[in-house]
Image 1: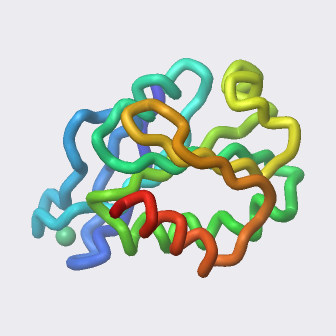
Image 2: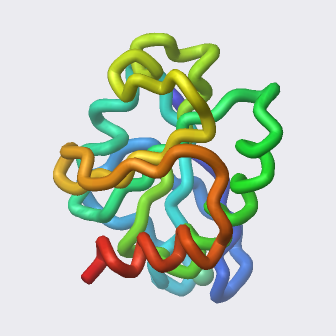
Length: 141
Ligand SMILES: [Zn+2]
């Protein structure tokens, strides 16, 4: 069981804990706006982490991967911009071989867009913020 992530409310700056898995949408305990939902999942929690009605972006990364570090702040910003509609699920492929295998993560960063636990799009390699935002918008339409 993982503890989730601490997220600062973009509206009132209160720190909230967002769960790894939830059927609902995490909202700020103080001002009730939708919170950015970016969490770390592992082999055990992946299935429940992607089980949400929101668009899911799975980020398969590793600590040694430079391009992964490059897109990390972009994913952070997108999770804030699309709070309530987009969930970012980060998985360290070195620590989670089953997930790496499931998504055939031979080259990283590897991004998987998912709806209702099904992959709807795959992005290989680091992309610009513009490209990633356009993809998110397309899949939210
Ligand atoms: Zn708030």
